[in-house]
Amino acid sequence: MAKTGLFFGSFNPVHAGHLIIASYMANFTDIDEVWLVVSPQNPLKDKKGLANMYDRLEMARLATELAEKITVSDIEFKLPQPSYTIDTLTYLHEKYPGREFVLIMGADNLASLKKWKNYEVLLKNYQLYIYPRPGILLDEWENHPSITLTATPQMEISSTFIRKALKENKNIQFLVPDQVIVFMDSKNMYR
Image: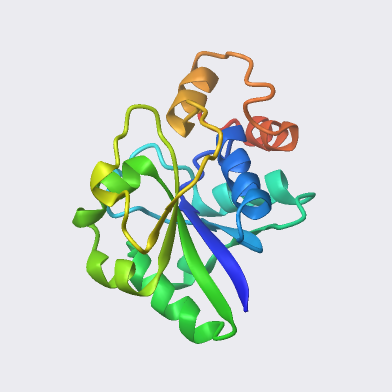
C-alpha cells in the first residue's frame, strides 16, 4: 500500500523550507510520495494577509512541477471551511482506500496538537511524521507509538519572513524558487 505523506499548509508563499521538508520526507523516510495540501484557511490562524488560495495553489504547483515524488493537492478547496485536518483525512480515506495517509507536521504544531479538533482520533488512526523546529521540546511525545520524530534539516525560513522581505523590496533569490518569484512579481503579491 502506497504511503502518502500529507503536508498541510497555507504556503503563503511556498518557500525553500517547505520544499526541503517535503523532499526529505519523500526521499529519506519510508513515505512513498508527499502531497502539499494547500489550505484555504487554517482555523488557528488569522486570515488577514492571506493571499488568494488559487494563487497559493499555483505557486505550490510551480515550485514542485519538476519534483519526482511531490504533488500538490487542492482537496481542501472542495470541503467546508475552515478545514479541520481530521475531516480532510476522513474524506481522503474514503476517496483513496488503497492509500495509507500519514501526517507531516512541524514540532511546533505537535506541541499544540491538543487544541486540534478530535486530536485523539488523529493519534489513534494515523501516523505523524514530525520535523524539528528550533527551540521546541517534544519530551511528552517521545515514545508515542503514532509519532515518528525525523531528522529533517532545520531552516528558520518562514512565509512571514518572505512576505516582510518582499514588502521591504529585498532580494529573496534561493529562499523561494525562481518561477514562484516570477509569478509573485507578475501579480505584485505581498508588496
